[in-house]
Length: 112
Image (cartoon, rainbow, N blue to C red; front, side, top):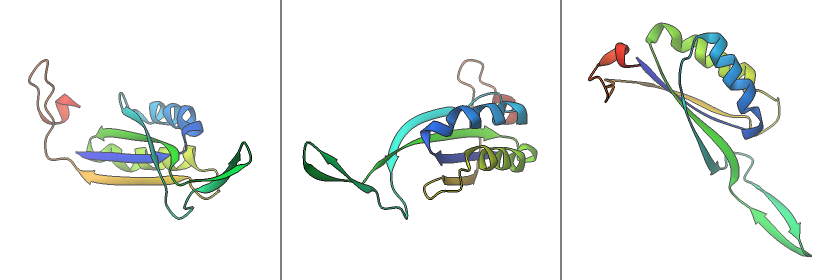
């Protein structure tokens, strides 16, 4: 099993959700986060004063999938989240040792 963690621009979330549903993903966790990468934030002017906005709003997706679905999920996220501009985000793929469904006690892929 794999845990796929993606950090994307928040306004691309609906497109990514639709692409994941088409790829066969049945559930995910989405968190509103802030961060920066190479873009290093930007400056804004508010009431005549200039402020540096270091942390930009992002959406973090966490999706547990069977190994055979992982590459399709990564491709679905990448294509749906891509704008071609800096700050599109990152996708991390981690090995997932075990999963337990709390309600039933199921383990492994049956719990996903």
